[in-house]
Length: 251
Ligand code: PGA
Image (cartoon, rainbow, N blue to C red; front, top):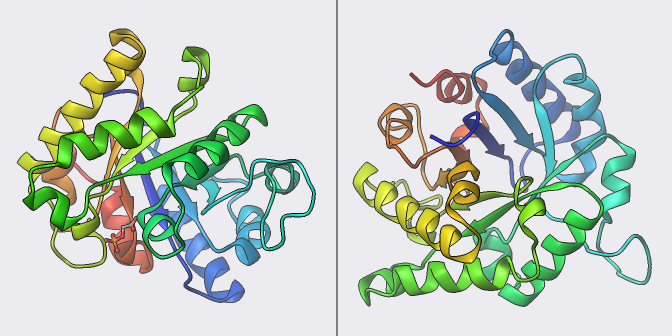
């Protein structure tokens, strides 16, 4: 286990502002007094400020679901790192499989967003993961290694301390088909070795690697028991206070 375990909720394109505030309140309540784990939620852009305000007195961290790399400029439809910092948001999910596969973001763009993010001092969660086809063709490790290498291009060792990696097999996202704890551990261990090759072992041992893809109250405990699983990135099950509270309180 590297660092403090991180349980992160990705709300995707769900919830109105009022619904977001209500859920954030419940997450803050469920996180009261937890010191041995970190909790993060990523609402839609429009709810970020309101959610940030609601959890201000709690340990809950708030993240955006994407961010551009420049301070400002002609980037229609984008949000800049300083805009997030202006409302107190200091984390951002990058390279989520939906950004890659629905919106066509490639490794080069994810890398651009990631290096920009780091320059402004925000902490990125870099999402990587293979498709079902790639897994069946036994390309999982090649794909993962390439996404890491390209996604982390030009990222210096001292900046890596701020980076979290999330392994999210595309075939497990929103499908109810969770990777087994053995499958998760196998790829997490591979990621750590790849990070040690790219940087060095001590640093790789300190990087938090989250698992994502149909994480639920029923499987969180066994996933978190794996030596290289340092947290979870939760989609569907993060949208209900009760299930997310159970996930936060994994044992
Ligand atoms: P899921 O989504 O938990 O609904 O599978 C995970 C994610 O996309 O981060």
